[in-house]
Structures are given as C-alpha cells and as structure tokens.
Length: 115
Image (cartoon, rainbow, N blue to C red; front, side, top):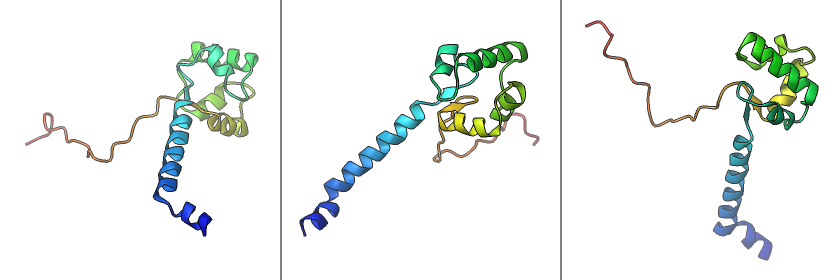
C-alpha cells in the first residue's frame, strides 16, 4: 500500500520529469560540431584517437567543411558506416543543431513576390 501511494504521488512524477529533462539537456549539451572541433575536442569523442583526429583535421583543412557524416566517411580513411553510427551516438555531428520552434510558421517573403 505504501509503495502504491509512493508511485502515484504527484511529487514522485514531478521528480521523474525533472530527471528526464536534465538527462535530455545533458545529451544535447554534449554534441560536438565536426566542422568547429579542435583536435583535443575530437579526441574526447569515444572512438576517436590522436591519429583519427589528425586525419579529420587534415581532411577538413584540405577539402573544406564536411557536409554530412557520410561526407566524413567518404573523405577520411578508416571511418565507415558502423563507425559513423558510433560517433553520432557519442555526440559528433555536422553543423549546429537548430532549435525547433513549433509556435512559429514559416513567413512568406512578400518583398520579392509578384503581384
């Protein structure tokens, strides 16, 4: 009976909600932009050592910013599809994550539209 009251308590669910929110924020905060990362930051990602980080930076310098994770795989030796999946799970991404705002709809460009 005590256990049932504990699980159905509003305070219990409020605490659970806060924990879930904090976990999601922590996951988002750990994301690293491949095109902005330094060698030290790349090496903090699980699966990237000094040699791989150096190859990524050399290729980024030679060929410009990476367009996607697939582009990374195509351009850097030793990074295949399986490794890309692992790197994404560890927080590596191409470009900054843009916040999604559901309250605003896309505005029409009325300056250049024909009348």
